Length: 505
Image (cartoon, rainbow, N blue to C red):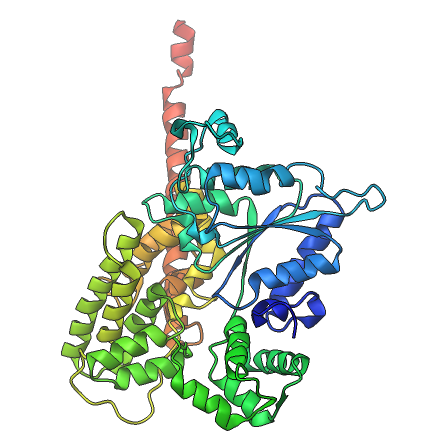
C-alpha cells in the first residue's frame, strides 16, 4: 500500500491524459496556458467556477505539470488577508519565476488560489507599511500592526491580478461569495471581470465517473463487475472526489473484489445530498403535496435558489389549472425573492436557504389539486440564449442611450422593459410600440422584449404592424423636418430688405 492513506490524494491525476470530464473547459485552460508561452495574454488570470469535487484545481495542476511548470498553491479559506496573499502569491507572481532556469525561457510559475469565494469583506486596501510589518517575523511585534481575518484580502487579490507576470488561476464553488453580499457587489464583480476570464465547470458525466472508478480499482488491484461500476455512477451526483472516497470506504475492509450488492448496501447505509436534473426534479416537486417532501425536492434540484425561483415562476401558470393556486404561488415567490435579495445586505437571514425552501413550497403545497400523469415543465424563455437577455443589439443600444454599463442595463433596465411589454405581465402591453420606437429598436427587437417566439404567426403580424407604424412615424418626422427647414428659409427670405428699402439706405 502507498504511504498516502487518502485515496483522493493517492489517485489525483498528475497528467491531463488521466483527466475525465469537462473537456471543453480543459481545452480553454490549455489554450490560455499556451498563450503564456508567447508573452502575457490579455487575460492574465482565469476564474474556475463549479461545484466541489469536479476537478477544478486538479485540472490546473495536471496541465501545469505536463508543461513542466511549477505551482504555488494557496487556499484562500486558510490564509485570506492582504499580508498572507502578498507573502504566498503576489511576490511570486510579480517577479521572474521563482524556479527560473535560463535554459528554459518559457518556464512559468502557476499561482493557484483555491476557494476564493471564502474571501469576505470589501475592496478597501491596507497601507504598505501595515502589510510589510505583518509579513515580518518579529516576536515582539505589537497587535497594532497585525492583520486579522480577511483584512485587505480582496484588494491584494486585485493587485495580484493587475500586476502579475505569471499565470494566476482562481477557483471557487459559488462565485457570489467572491463578489460579496454588500449593495456594491456588482462593482466588485466588474473590477474582477476586467482582469480575468471565467470558466464554468460542470458535474462529471456517468461515463467520466465509470472511467475514474475503473482506474482507481485497477490501481488498487481490486476486482469489480460492470454492475458495481454502474451502481456507483448512478448514485453519484457527478462529484469525482466523492466517488473516490466512496470507493475507499467500500474497500476499507480489505476486500479484493466488489459487486453490485456491496455497492447498493453502502448506498442504502449512507446519505448524501444528491442533485437531480431540473426537469425530472420539477416534475416530482409539482406532484408533491407535503411541505416536507417539497423542501427535500427543492434542495435536491440542481439549480441555485435564484434560478429555481425563475423556473418555478415560469412553470406555475402552465402547470397549475387553478387561478387561486397561481396567486398563492406568486405571493410565495414574491416572499422568496425578498429573502433572496437579502444576500446583498448585511442581514441575519440565511437568504439562500429560505429562498430555496419557499420556492419549493410555491410549486407544491399552494396547489390543492392532485397532479397526476406526465408533467412537462418547460425552459423559461427569458433564460434562453436567444432571449432578450442575450440580444446584444438591444443591450448595446440601451448602453449607448443611458451611458450605463452593459451589466447594469442587462440586470436593472431590461427587466423593467420586459415587464412593460411581456404578455405574462399584468402591466405588459405588446401592442404599445411607443417606448421601443423612441429607443430606436427594430420590430424583431420589440418582439423579443415581449417574449414572443419568432415563428408564431401573431408575432410576425405584430412585427409587421410595428414596422408600418415606425415607417409612418419616420416619414412624418421627415416631412416635419422638411417643413421646418422651408419655414425657416421663408422667415429668412422675408427678413431680407426689398429693392426699395435697399435704395433708401
